[in-house]
Image (cartoon, rainbow, N blue to C red):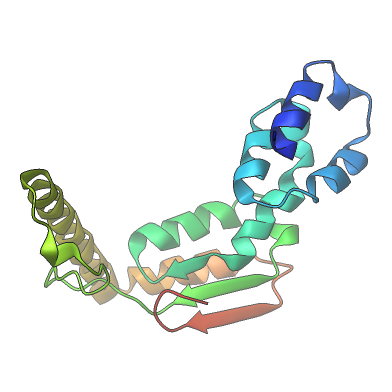
Length: 170
C-alpha cells in the first residue's frame, strides 16, 4: 500500500501544484501523519515546499533542544527561518548535558560492544563525544551558551510555552 506522500508525489508530476491554491495544499499536507511524509512532500517541488511549512513545523513543537552548542545552533537556525516562527508554539529545553568523562550512561549497551567493528565505532563515538563536551564546557565558561540560547529565544513571536525537560524525553 502506497503512502499518501508517494501518491501526492505522483500527482505533482501532472502539475497538481498549479491547480490548487497554496492554502488548500497546506490543508491537505496537514493530514500527513509523519514528519518523514512531510519532508518527502517538501522535496517534490517548490510550490509543495512552500505549502508544507505549517505541517513541517509541527515536528519542531515536539523536538527537544539540549543545552549543547550543536543543539542551540539548530535552534538558532530555526529561529532565523521566518516561515517556521509563526507555527512554533512550544519549545522543549532538555537538561541533558555532555560530560567530558566520555561515559556512555545515555547509551545503554554501548559498553558491551563485542565485535571489532563495534569497538572501533564506539571509540570514534567516544572521541566525538569528548570533543563535543570540551567545546560545550568552553562555551559555558565563556557565557556563550547562554548568549546562544538568549539569541535563539528572542525571535519566537508565537511562542506560548517553554518546557524544561529532565533528561531526553517529554
